[in-house]
Image (cartoon, rainbow, N blue to C red):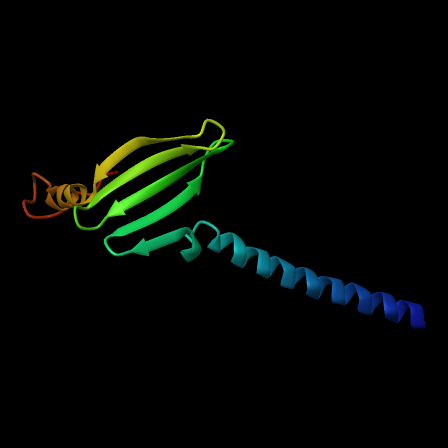
Length: 114
């Protein structure tokens, strides 16, 4: 074998190895993307605040009051310079309702929505 053929074979082999490593790293990052990051959440005393991006120049801010179990969602628009309540949710009541759902055929068991 000529020296150039050996060099080409080694170059090709290293390209396959680097490609496999790259694919492995990309798969790991894609799998982790949907998870919330700790930097996005601020917790102080009875309140927890989280913000997420919205449409164009808008941002959503979620405020959880752990004492009253209320979750309030605000929409912040920097261009319009306004902050308005989009919705509220009583988290404690929602969880209690989910736990109290029962199947009429088997009282005491939780029903699973399909």
